[in-house]
Length: 322
Image 1 (cartoon, rainbow, N blue to C red):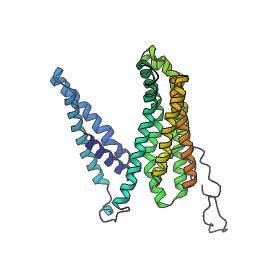
Image 2: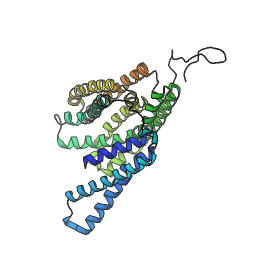
Image 3: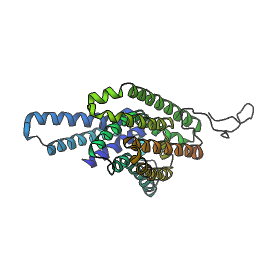
Image 4: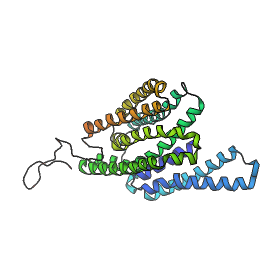
């Protein structure tokens, strides 16, 4: 099933790269899940107690296969005819050289997400870890705006950078950052307002202790949103190795902060370590975007000093990029 899901994700990425964003989401997020739910529901009704996890996995694999076929059909319909005869932009060896750093980026993200929980297990009992997991999962919803915007904006980052259109790239980056920050801010306001009653309703009053770590993690997500799509922006413009280095150092820093703060502050210490690391790596990547691309990635979107274009036709005076 994993192979089918990976191929489906690649097909969706190709559709999004061709600027068919909704179609790129449809096979994996709609067809696969809808069919898997329908297949499992019917099988559970027919088999009753005989329905097992193996049946569910097999039916999910079938749904993934159907979604993959649907995605390939969609891709074939929108794929430009010129691609069949166009020379490759990059050789296979160059693609491999980029693939390895991108895989490492994904790995470091996963390590960062799990570091606090792993280190926390060295100092507290399972009940406390369960409470902290609730905090992490709840705070994770705050990043939905960034993930959603990245799905739409990332192909545009790559396209406009390859065209050398700095002005439009800056506008897309600024717009995406503002949308992301607005969505995250609304989510944080909602979480602060009704977070505790929602926790009590969804998990029980014994999980009230998750509320403080949630608020601390929310601060980190505000920094994450406020910095803009720095990781995707650098990855889509050929600076994935720089991202790997920064995130690798962030993982090491996260481990150190967790070891130092958890014995002193418990769950809040783990949350603080994660939030601090998230803020610092975004700050470093924000600076890298300015230095490497000359782009202001935050919602401010202020043109950078020293960025100029050729003299205009009328007066021959240089004008700032905007």
